[in-house]
Length: 240
Length: 295
Image (cartoon, rainbow over all chains, first blue to last red; front, side, top):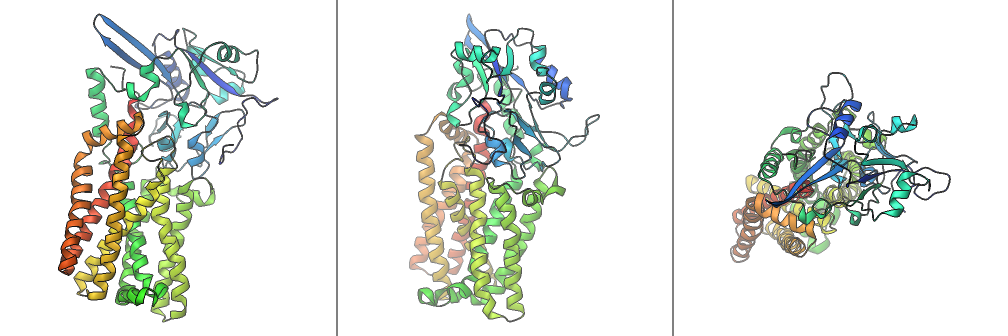
């Protein structure tokens, strides 16, 4: 039983909801509409993302393939970010969401370090319209929309219907049916986080760390830039 | 072009590395300064060699604390909320415990200094014992801060807190040696006391360094990635500064001091060990953050 959470996992608990997402990679076309929808929904600043689509090119001409991998917070049932937060600013909702109390966050960034999915980021301090800044933010499974009986913005906008959202505890929901009928995969299950974003037919280059090194010239250049930016030589590590 | 663009930035920079180093140094300096009051005549009374150092040591620990505390606060994105880890205490977070113990440790330093100032020797021992426990908690909590990240395999290792405690022994010994040398207070017993501590610290650091090495070489995909990362990005810090300058050279100097009791050589060995202690921590902190960004 996980400790240090504010709500126990509701997966399989009768009478409770457990929201989850299934991402059918057979249908993702890498259009990035989900990324844009999220940016629009939350005024996500430049340089950070609540959701992303990782793109990976493998093989060499003429035998090549481009892989897409939508990534977001996995709203784990055993979230390390929640256990590590020193102020309980990030907490587990009883319906499975992992949410953030901005008014409590001190931006110590221990949750960023704890998250194996790179799903958290620091909001810049000076923002034009939204006044929440200088704290940690992440995907919330669009809790405010789900509470109003809407689906998350990325699901709403996904034109390939690659992202499917629903209550996993409801056997008649589409997510429950997909999880039951397909050999779904979660990311890094060995980390013990019990993630609740399920992928249908992912490629190994996206789910296995040893195969995930950037291979293209552009990706390596980006990685170099990232390392240069992350050598601990900048105040606030360059995040604020 | 989209293969790499999405990664959010790694969380911790130089402030955390420096903080870990300074607070560890402050903790061990306190132990040295409080040793005469706590251990007294135990072990043949060798701890009494630190009696002239008590006030200076406590002041040094206080100065380090006054530097490292604000450094930790200023590293926060919202520094004005620095009391929140205590006000909204979360028992599963080592950071919360650290935030609680840090001011208590400061109070012990001030209390010890006050007992010395107002000549209350009966208070020295209880404050010294309490402060020693809290000083142990300083490097311990910083190590646990990394260890609890079970999703980062380089950190999720039970030797990390032990390593941080041992590295604080090295850096504390360096500071105490430098102060003793500067004040001309090195005598045979002081030399023996510091020499023994440095020997133990270096031996344990070497053992843990080798353990870390084997773990990286025989570990999972992520640990192998960390191994590659360390050898590609941090080889100077890891091999030259940590192993060469911070472990091997002090060991050779310790062999020299075994035959030729030189306070200067011992101090040099301790300072080099402290340099190694700093870089060992920094490599672990940075590499631990970067292993997952490919994924």
